[in-house]
Structures are given as C-alpha cells and as structure tokens.
Length: 229
Image (tube, rainbow, N blue to C red):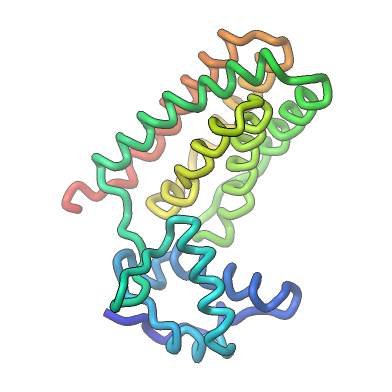
C-alpha cells in the first residue's frame, strides 16, 4: 500500500518551524494509524497532502526513523514500523524491568537536592492530566510520562543506562499500540511514590516502586492487544 491522501486537518501550522511542524504532523498520522502500521510511506504523496516540498518530509522521516516509527530499506524506501507483537511487548517490559528499577535505585543514591526536587515536581505534573482518545489529546500525558522516566534515568548518573532506556522508545510504541484512557490517576500516584522514595534516598524503596509501576503499566496496556494479530 502507499500513503493515502491526508485530510487538511493535519496540514502543518505556522507556529513551529516548517521541519518541526512536518515532523509533528507525520508523527500524529503514524500514531493515529492514518498511515497504517507496516504501510509504505510516499514522500511525494505526503508532500502534496501537507502542501510542502519533499525536503522537510525527508528530514522528518529521518527523525521518525530515529524514533523507531519508520524503517528505511534499500531500494524500497520507508515503511511505518509494525505494531508490537505480544512477544515484543513482553520483551520490552522485560528490558524495562531490568533497566528502570536500577535507574531509580541509582537516582535515590546519587541525586542531589535539586535533582530530587525536579523528580518530585515532574511526578506532581502528571496529577490531573488525563489521557484522551486520539494521539493529539493523549500527547500531553504521554510527554509528561516520558519526561518523568527520562529524568530518573538522567538522575541515575549513568549515561549508558539512560541511553539504553531512551533507545527502547517504549512510550511511542506503547501509546501507538493503545491509548489507555483509564488509569492515568494510577500512573500519577505511582510516579509520586517513586519520587518520594528517591527524595528520601531510599534506594530499595525506589527500585520497588518503579518495579510496581512498570508491572502495573504492563497490565494496563494488555487490553490493547488484538489476539488475532
């Protein structure tokens, strides 16, 4: 399949730079499945639909490839990445359960006063932010969730650990699979418990709270699977 014509509602606005706006528009199309998983991406078709030249589309595709949302193959161009399979989903959380409790443990030990304050502030920021139907409505919650986890990885003091966590692209893959409209309050509470343990310097408590959060998140995402896939 090739990329279908896109309605005017996703045309880039003028408030961002053109490259950034094309990237955000294309990311939304992929996250909302307007460009279906596994579908070939037409650079010229997208350029016409978004009313831009092919250059910013190519630049956006390079960024989306780095995000893990498209793949480039020699002689065949770009395709969107398939959705996670159940096996890949399980492997993703297996990796997160290895890496992120370790990051939380290190953060509790190594964080300075300013970093502890930032972690608590980021945890508080997710309180009252609700997910919604569609990627654009869900994006604010997704961004805060990702920022919280990235901050803990940064606060761990291990550049390699942080890079490994970021490279999983877990938030993009999970929220592309399923937008969980329920359970955002649970996420906020879990974030606050992780932050409280880090603020107290409780390494075991921080690791345990992160482990609980990830296993709970795994359970919240399971309904997103179509068993026939």
